[in-house]
Image (tube, rainbow, N blue to C red; front, side, top):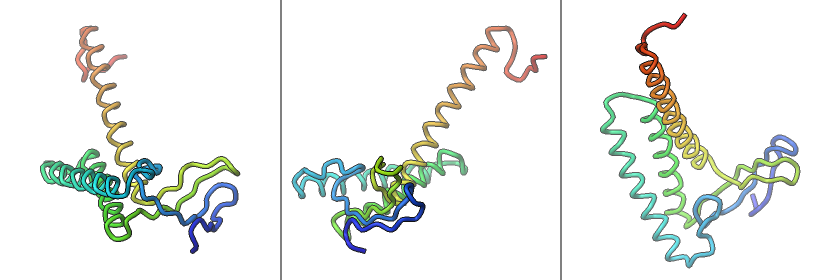
Length: 148
């Protein structure tokens, strides 16, 4: 495909569009000097990969968090490999409604987004459980007591 060429998959909703992203997510840092952008993005991705590997290895069992970390790790590694080989990331998934566009992204970006969403949702569920348990205790009930 030529740069910016599109193939419609679902009319007025989903296209395969070939783009190159020299920056970070949503083309952040794309206007920065190349050496700054490349060094910063390679360093951040490498650090993230090391931290995620440690978190996954230290996990005692497979959990929602370890799956989320693995998704983020895979996405970060995929984008790092693309950046190391090409000097930029290839983005190609274009979601849009007629002329209303979401930024073009790739599968690695999707994995990172899904992983982060899982972590956020897991945190919200924990907070809700704690709040519910605290409210039951204040009413003189234990969290395992059934309320009729």
